[in-house]
Structures are given as C-alpha cells and as structure tokens.
Image (cartoon, rainbow over all chains, first blue to last red; front, side, top):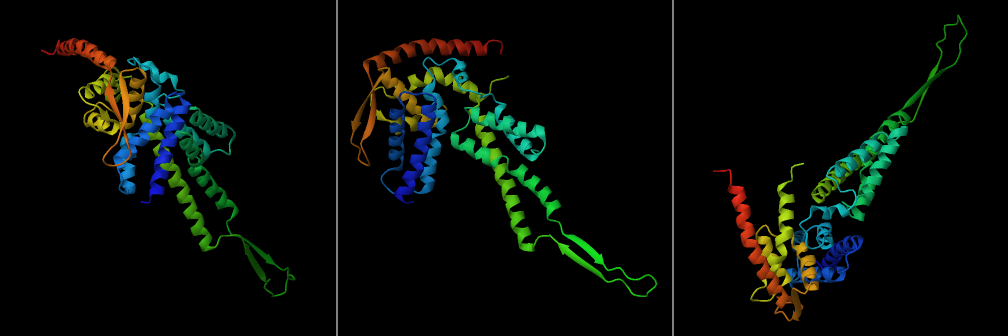
Length: 223
Length: 113
C-alpha cells in the first residue's frame, strides 16, 4: 500500500474522531487526535504497512463515536446519566429509522407514507448515534429498495407492449376478407431489460446492506 | 430493562479504569500504545482508542505527566509517568478498593450457600 493511500485512510479516521469530538464540545480534542495519530504511527512502524495492517490498527482503536463518548464524560463517572446528554439514542431508534425510511419509500406515492419517510429521515439526522457520513449514506440508500420496487411497478404499466389492429371496411356481401394491420409500440429491448434488472437488484442490495450496517452500528452505540 | 453484560462492564470500568492506568505507570514510564496493549489483554478497555481521552484527562488533572523521548524505530514518542499527586491518588484508590471489593464479594456470596 502506498504511503499516501495509507495516510489518506488514517487521516479519514482521525477526521471522523475530530468531528465527533467537536460535536461533543471536547476541549482537548487536538491533544486526543495527536495522541491517536502517534499510536497509529507506533503501531504501524516505519515499514510500508499493508492495507490490512492499517485496517487492523484502526479497528482496534475502535469506533470514533465511542472515543468521543469517553472524552465527553466527566469524572467521577459512575453515573449512567452521562449518556443522556446525547440526543435520541434510545435502543429502539435504529430499528425505527430503518423501518420508517424503508417502508415510507416503498409506498411514498400515497399521502401518509411520505410523512413516514420524512419522520425516519428526521430521526436519522437528529440522532447522535451516527456520523454525518453514515447519515448521508442512510438517506441515499435506505429508500433505494422501495423506490426500485415502486419503479418496477410503474415500468410494468408504461413500457408494456401495446398492439393495435386496424382493418379496412369492406362491402357487405362481397367475399373479400378485410385486411387487418397490426402495429405494436412500446416494449423493451432485451439489453434494456438486463440493464434495468441489474440496477434494480443493485438498489435493493445496497439498501439492505445500508440498513444492516446502520442498524448494527446504531444498536452498538445505543448502549 | 435488564442491563446487558456490556452495559454493566461499561459502568464498572468507569470507576476503576483510570486507577488501573495509574497502576500500570507505577515504577516506570510508558508510551500510549504500550499501555493500550496491556489493558486490552483483559476486559478493562473496550477499544484502544478510548484510552487517549482518559490519558488526556489524567494529564489535565495533574495525575500523570508527559515527556517526549526518542524511539529506536520511528518518530519520538510521548511517554506518560506518574506525578506525586498520581501516586497519592493511586494509594487512596487501593485503600478504598480492597474493602469495596470484599464487600461486593461478600454480598454476592450471601444467600448462595
């Protein structure tokens, strides 16, 4: 792994810690970030580290939000109430966010579900359980499966093949058979079908993965 | 709601972890990574990163001091050492902890025999 890629990864992690500390109003944040950087440098040593090494060191340092939580609790800290200073961190929040956004997106054409979707997004952005990046990811990806399935339904109606038959009137009594012309419009080419199916599957998979990640991180931090 | 093992652990750490850090510094100064590795061997530290806010707080409280020292490999390291106040705080904790631990053990044992 190139040194620049390695330091980009490290910088991103430290920026996340710094943002989380800023959000909590931690005064010593420069000191904490500097000592974390030093820890990473000592752990990786001088040799060029592999991406796995960097990931391992960052993983054992742990969740940036957990570090910020530790930094913002006061001594003596026997009191559980310390976590109440964070907004909207009840254990049910992650499940509610995922359910509201995904169900709302699935049925958003109706009046009420759009409010459900909005409530989910407001809860996601208002809660202290996720970083701004995760919130953005959730806002973009969680509604994806619903919108995709909804789009599939619309597509079934609007792009179906339509055929019209026309015939020319013939004189009654004559033995002529009226000529019938059939013209068909609409319908998708095979390659278009493949592309759309691919996009739909990708949207559903991305949404489900985002839901699992946000839910698991949210629950872990709600402790 | 019944508290989970993780929640109980978090609450217990809150009272004791700082003093465990002080105890690790007794007799010799150490750098962050070294302290972190020692503490994560057991269950004392949830993740290595949470050590640094604690060290920062201990330093601000005057219980530990820091100094920069050259290292054989890599950039200079920040070493942490106990101050006189740190020593005293550690002694007081030890004097409080031992009867506290016995009292908890006795309470947990009562009724199980």
